[in-house]
Length: 446
Image 1 (tube, rainbow, N blue to C red):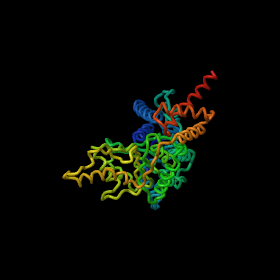
Image 2: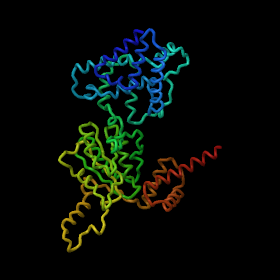
Image 3: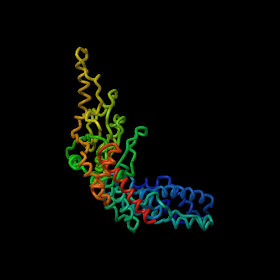
Image 4: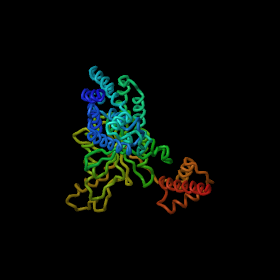
């Protein structure tokens, strides 16, 4: 048919957005259009390509994270447009040549022609050629998660705007702003990452811990210092590397994760790195240098045994090397130790040792490592009174209604049978109590 033949040919005429149709799904879609364009299309060939395309789209749809806009082909096309890396998307917000803008307008008009080829249109043609009236289409799927994450909400809204527009060229200015604020790759789209040494890559974490700073009661003063430092960092102002020191369960790691949920939409990103992989810092720095996002390199539960030498990687990272640290990268670490390296008595040189000066230098190097963080924020174990205050606050936030004296008695019993007083223990107690109450109510209704 002339329509399909013309569309397949126009795919080769895209100027900037050629990568949109260059993946395996796009290539199979174009192959199917070319087969449709022949008057005597062979059913075997059409069937082979259609079933392969159907399988690819089904796999994408069933495991898709978020809401599907249109049918799965249309959703795929929109995602490819928003993720396209080309001169227009990469220079968004800066000076773009008139020819580049004109090319974008033209490509948008062409790509919409592929968007309106819905599942129903493509499937009907395949049914006719194959003489299979019951051949399934790709417009009814249940994605793995239909609820968008906070970082995906602007993306979803823009995809819906594209879907209802009859003139994609008119959306070019808004598309540029989308690229400015959302970017075109994983570092722009996701908030959290894990550094994977074997693959030398930053692995996105789609489902980040939803903890909010407001939920971490009892440590508002400590949080305020870290929030202020992070706000300065996001504003492009001088800011410090941070060590969060304190006992287990006092909310150190949760505070850092809470920063991500508060500031992720403003460009904050978190990269979790194992302490043994800190020597990979130059690779990470190269990946983030010059980007508009601000990155926190997060090392959780940081400490070193006496015979470990990897602390030297952290020391070099904090002090700097001949290569300047990226201005958009800070280090936040948590530790249960004020001095990050376990000191043994054998570290202390005794009188008469021939290498006494060198030995003292080693001790000083180890003990001063934590001092190389610009900010050290201490999270102390709560007193009994503060522990009870945390319990009362969490209970109120959870909606638990109970006599305060009864709640206090239960909280103290829970503390004695667990690992002492901490915000974590209080949270675990409230979760346990809330589960009991809800289950009891459900049993009464039965």
